[in-house]
Length: 291
Image (cartoon, rainbow, N blue to C red):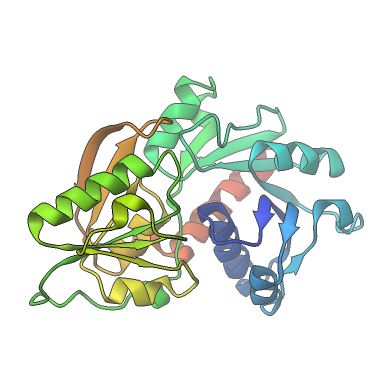
């Protein structure tokens, strides 16, 4: 199958970029012909990794117009809109990976036959707020490289316990990060932030800050739990690594509405990229039979 996989960016380590990378890698491994098409910010780091596996990465303004794809897998409305225009008549699905309209509103277009939501709360949002029919949505969890993150359980005798929080200190995350500093202080634990730069509220003896990078599984090896906002990629990577997670349910202003504790599920393969890709291909097969 010939597949165009579009994303706003393809150069950093954000959730959507890593998700696109993992899906493209697995699709190519299964023999599909894949082009990843970021709108901008194509950089060597992810590009070289995925092109070594047979995937082509082409900015949208440089894409091969003779590619003739069978399906468009779109991510994020601005790039989805352009991708649909470049390839008229080709059916599409769209990933929606955020509850926040300000970050990732879905593109409402009749050529998009399915909206793939990365967690149930995103599905609830697109149905309630964007008025998309439930039958046009499906939940498929983010997929991770299972072998890479299946690192074995944490040392039960390790003291103090360590909680890893991955992500930059923006206005949505800062209240959760401050709460984690307080919670770990009270428990006598260590809070470890994988973030660029140390904020003032991190200047406590039980707080560690490390630079973000590709080898997040090495950070998880030296941890017992993860923490993060919403049910994102870090939580999933932690669960595959047998680290339970604390999930901060926040709104666009960063206000904390609940803190959920998520134990390691009995079957961690529900988060593997193989399971994710099986489910995505199942949706694509359904969409192509509609045509």
